[in-house]
Image (cartoon, rainbow, N blue to C red; front, side, top):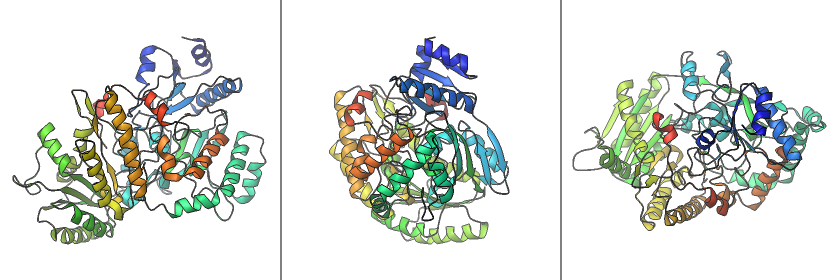
Amino acid sequence: MNKIASYLQSHLSGEVFDSPATRSYFSTDASVLEMKPSLVVYPRSTNDIRKVARFSWQLAEKGHVLPITARGSGTDQTGAAIGKGIVLVLPAHLNKILELDTQQKLVRVQPGVNFKSLQETLHTHGLFLPPFPASYTYSTVGGAIANNSAGEKSLKYGPMTEWVDKLEVVLANGELIQTGRVSKKDVEKKKGLTTLEGEIYRVVDGLLNEYGEPLDAYYDNLLVSKDSVGYDLRDVKRRDGSIDLTSLFVGSQGTLGVITEAILRVAPHNPHTELVVAALSDLESTAEVVEKLRLLNPSAIEMIDQNLIAFAEKERHATFPEELIGPDEKPAVILFVEFDDDRRSREKKAKRAERELSKLTDRIVISQDSEEQEKHWAIRHLASTVINYNHEGKVAVPVIEDAAVPHEQFINLVHEIEKLFAAHHLSLAVWGHAGDANLHVHPLLDLSKLTDRQKMLKLMGEYYKKVVELGGTIAGEHNDGRLRAPFVRMQVGDELVELFEKLKEGFDPHGVLNPGVKTGTDAKQLIELLRKEYSIVHLADHLPRT
């Protein structure tokens, strides 16, 4: 054990490791990037995290930067759960549900708690946390907060930021703060503090005043229902002068502080749903009917395209219900429309959905039975066939898998994807959240080949350019991280990139908190961090899906 590891181990109640095998394991997450940490720490308490932060801060003051990266289950697809310094592995010990208030519908948790475990506990009380990601069975709540995650039910319930009430956060220098709405009078008191917290309030207030016009212009023109690019500043300061830092930390990917506790809002859970599944032969009419279905306020409108159907048939010999897919005709799209209202409302809405869909197809299934619904949802989750593909060096790489556009641009996004993949001679499969126009695509590339690595970067640049032209976001629900940091300027412009950099510096003046994530990584650095062989084998026992 090296000197730093020994020193930390003597001061922490948690464990510290610097063995090559442990460092190698934590050098990758679910992204195409790789960074080997110097140390791996399993903190047992908030106090452990504070000590690590103080130690790193003091080193940085002397000119030696040892970065800190907080990590959940390593499901991040943007390279935000890896770092070259200290990786804090939170699920080992900080994995508890601390308090549940069923009357106020609030739950207090530690960041390493498994999302599925929390959801199962909430279900026993007739509650749930709606914006669960596809990876919820094996990912952590802290990771979902850090990424501002969303999922199939976010069409109705919104992303994670709408469900976070308050946070406990360790700042870069080890200070511990609690977030929440602070009145104008108390903001002035905060700004008078000589602590890092005081400096943060001064910086945030000053930047919001300085960059008010470009911020307003950006958010006024942002027409997507999901956006995790940069830092969320839209509701930090209100007209009454009050400030709430919570939304800044949600989606910040550990670059502003380490979240150690969260108070989350939860919603009543109805285990009974109505599912309408339809196979449609025309892509253009699919876009039109999705617009009409959105008006019914469903809890989900999901889709897979004909390419994914063909891929699943070829690679996994997948079979489909005859009432959806006949032997001679393959649909262009399969839509999955779910309603979770009370029984009378959901049945009424399902019939209205059926009427709209019947104008386009007679291949419609309506299901109320949970087992039957699970079989149909398994069709949607055939996307796992693509993302787990690995054959003769070619793998599905998650590099352009998270764009979202205004819902009326849904069909245009699909066409742009088709043209891009055809131009680069790549196999195509599209799936995702049709109701949000938040679509996923994973090109099949061999990252051991220089030509494919170059193609990957070219794909990213061309795709994100088209997404921005359509008024969309390059990161709908998986965040920007390191992977998309070089392309953020393309979406938000020079002034907001400058704002994000100043904000980061105000929270983290020595650059110890996950540096290079969200800001500070360019295309050249991205190339240097690329893995030569990509896999998500460390998640294989969970069957990764998106």
